[in-house]
Structures are given as structure tokens and as C-alpha cells.
Length: 73
Image (cartoon, rainbow, N blue to C red; front, side, top):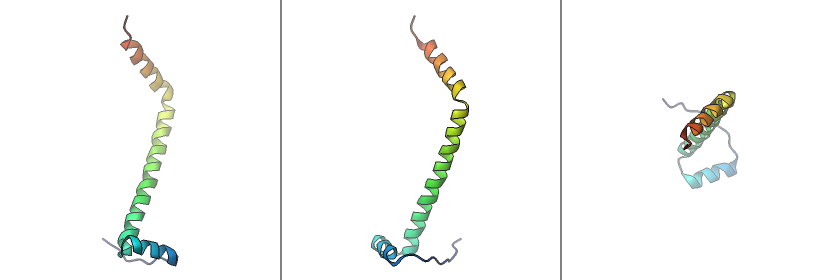
């Protein structure tokens, strides 16, 4: 469902948006969607790094064990 809203933007930005696409709503929707997806991805990455860091010692030991196992006699 779409909801009509109103935003106030600088005139020069509106001109730049119009050069991209005459449908301002479409341009702003694409830009907002891309920005929100970027923020969400950054938050997921931050959580993933925290999990990896929390388990780094164990994960590094597992990797070392796997490499040792692969060594030729």
C-alpha cells in the first residue's frame, strides 16, 4: 500500500532529481530503498563481525586443526 506524504527539499536537489527522472516519487523511492538497504546491510555486517570476533579463538583453532590434518607426512 502506498501512502501519500509531503517532504521539503532544496530547489537545486529537485532539479537534480528531475534530470534523473521526471517522476520524483519514483526517484525518491529508489533512493530511500537503496539507503535503507545499505543501513540494514551495515547493521547485519556489524552483528556478524561481533559474532565472529566472539568466537575467533575457537574458529582459529578449528582452522589450524584442519590445516594440520591436511599436511603431508
